[in-house]
Length: 150
Image (cartoon, rainbow, N blue to C red; front, side, top):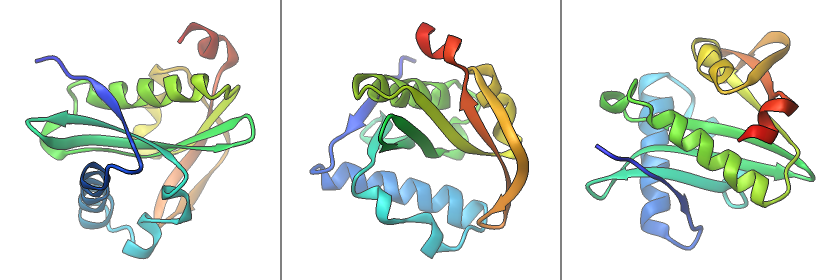
């Protein structure tokens, strides 16, 4: 099966609502993140990406831009589609969007179990482990050599 990550336009309310529904399922229902923390003020200005299968969003993520820095976050893959490389498609799409917007530094807050996934994509841990929304996280940045190759 071939999958492709797409940019979700902010005026596509149907697709954006599917992205938010998936995030709610993964973060609130599965991981216990308080609903008031899952959605935030950055959703309106962020660049969103999704993978769609049979008209349904099965993976999503977002990129929040601040100056020349881009924060990748809210990476979610529907449970039955995990482990099939779909998260990698979302990450690559967000990096592509960032490069098109002239981002030179990418960073993220990875849940500890996701650190190996991000390492595989060239991200390196920075600083101490911390708690966010009741879950242990590690800040990670994309190494400059990797950024040039993507």
